[in-house]
Length: 366
Image 1 (cartoon, one colour):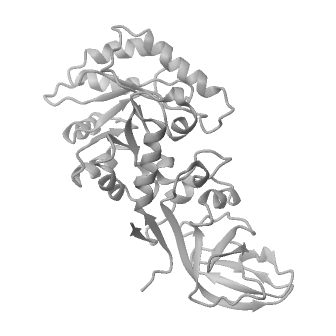
Image 2: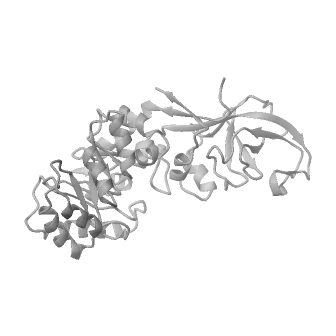
Image 3: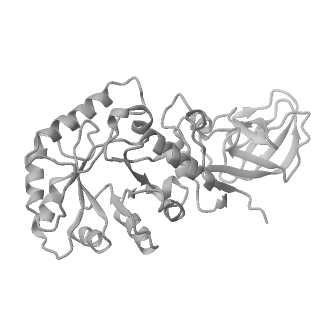
C-alpha cells in the first residue's frame, strides 16, 4: 500500500552533489555534515552510502557519533559541540570520536584526565559567530595548555565557523577568514602542515574560495539545497535528494463565499473544486505555509488554500480540474524546489527537511 505521506530519497543525487563539492574544493578533505539525522535524510543511510567517498563526518552531539560507530562507520567523526562533562568525554574516548574544544570548562576537564586512550581535538576560534569558540586573544593560552594535556593527540587541529557566508555581499566573511589566518600565524610553537584547519561550510565552499583549507564541511549543499536566499540548489548545479509526496483523499465542489479550514481564513472567490491532501504539520509540512503556496497535483501547479492542519491541507484545483481521489501530490521535489516552499512559509529549507516526521515513510531511489 502506498503510504499517505512519503519522501523519496534520490541516492544518485548524493553522488552528484559530492562531485560538486570536489569540483569546488579539489584540494580539500571532505567532512560530510550529517548532524540532525543528516538534515532529516537519515544519518546511518547517508554515512554508509558516503563512507568510501568522504574523509570524515561531522555530527552535532556525541550520541549521534556513537550511533554511527555502533552501526559500523569507521571514518573520522567530529563532534561539533564537543562535550560538557567528564562522562561525555569518556564516551568520546571509548568510541574514538574527535572533540571540538570551545570552552574553558572543557579545557579544565582535559587537564584532570589521564587515560591510555587519546583523543583528537579541533580547537575552535570564535571569529565573529559569537557562539562557540575562544576569542583571538585567548587562543595562545588555550593552545599552550592543550599541548600539555596527556589525553590529547598531537597535532592539534583548528577550526572556525562562518556566520554570514550565505550573503555574498557581506564583508564579514572576509574579516572572519583574515582573523582566523592572522591569529593562527601568531601561535607558538608555530603551526605546521600537520595542524589541519577547517573554515568552509557549504556557503564557504560555493562562494568564498579563500575559505578552502585542509578540510571543508559541506552540509546543506550535500542534500542538494542552496545556502543562499537568491538561488535554488538546482540553479547552483546541485540535485535535491529529498522529494515529499502525498495524494488527494477527496475532491469536492465549493461555492463562491464558502470558507475553508480552521478559522475560515480563506474565502472562496468563485465556484471551484477543492482538493484535500493527506499531509499536514504532523508530517512536517510547514504550519505557516501561506495561501497561494504552490503544490503539484498530477504534476500541475495548484495553490494551497486555508490553514495547514495536523493531517491535511486543502488546495484550489480549479473548476476545470479532472483530479480525483488517489491522484499524486508533490509538496516539494521535481519542478517545485523546497527553497520556494520555505520562502512561502517564512522559513528556510533547512527547517523543512529537518522537520519531516517519523510517520512519513522514506523510500530510497537509485
